Length: 246
Ligand SMILES: [Ca+2]
Image (cartoon, rainbow, N blue to C red; front, side):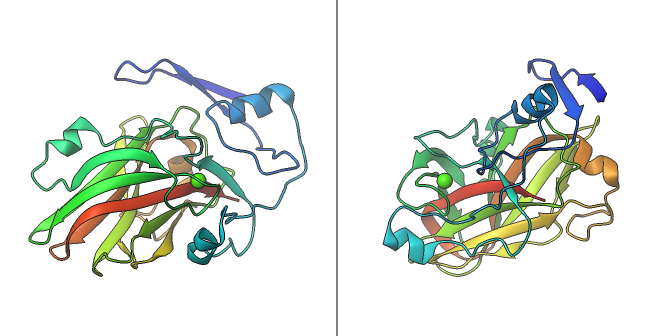
């Protein structure tokens, strides 16, 4: 078993990342920072359960839910259930930028693509120059080599003008390299859009061609909702079901 210990800068506790095959329980498991560690300790090799990507609680949400994953299984990392933002936040450095459009982040049950809760980003896009609303979270156990892709669902209310888009951004490796998707995925009003990025070596989804080390040392995960000029929009954007795909 490969074990490596790293000291995370910025006051975070030292984290141990363990490279092991990832096992799934019989039912879909909610990701937490100890999951891969748990698997390593137990040596479990449980059967792989298919993920149900959308299990909304009421018919209204069902109509708006994202399409199920076409193949493979998903490990849900962040589901925002139980009024829990799971350490996602708009970082202070982002709030200080003149082109920041992110005002606040709260847990919500107004819309969800998975379960009943989501993260509600309150945004203020001025509709003039480029602006972006960025939210992020530190990762602790960071070896994603078992996974081919990362995905997140994003919902815009019906009254949002067309023109907003989203990217996933990862901060990877010893040098904390900022790595964003090389294009913005367009978001549609009144529906969930799944933003997916391939994590495999040679993936075309990033601003460089990653090698396998890329997905072995992910330190932060971020999502940015952005507008390249228009539209002007003040209101909520919902994020849910951030997951790794096998
Ligand atoms: Ca959820």
